[in-house]
Amino acid sequence: MTTNDNWGYHPDDSNWKTPYEVITIFADVISNGGNLLLDIGPRADGTIPEEQVNILKELGKWNNKNAEAIFGTVAGLPQGHFYGPSTLSKDSTTLYLFIPAKTTGQVVVKGLMNKVDSIKVVGNNTNLTAKIVGKISWSPIPGLLYITLPENIQDEYVTVLKLKLDSPLKLYSGHGGLQ
Image (cartoon, rainbow, N blue to C red):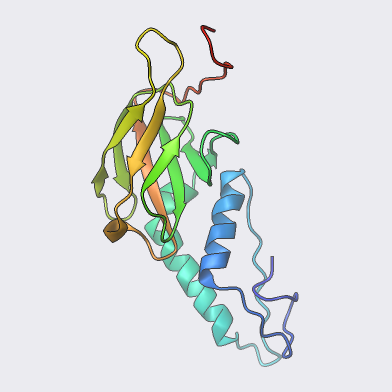
């Protein structure tokens, strides 16, 4: 991906992506198990345009803060269990959820069979609580996990939540009823 609309340096291209755009695209890529090749086009004298320097610095700052959710992880939840990017630790006992800035209210995870031992905000270690809604005691179908996300703990670009699970990730794969 390029930081504007062209590969390499084009003095006439000033359509720079914002750090938010690059970070959210990056989160989506790693959520799917991919790698992002980000093009930087230096000028003829070797200097890098300030807009690109800003993108790199902000991406680097965000990567450093959230390194545990990025490096050494694998693709996250399959589609339908969480509406956003996610990654997993290699042993599948830690789930990371990537929440875009300015998300208010609650985050929902569907079909999680595991008990969640703890929920923390990566980068500042704030503990969060969750509640399970819709779980019926006699049914094998898990309820919905609702996590309240206070505004004051959010990252300026993408907040990452760390869910420590009681065992390797297990998702409900049935279709309702008593399966």
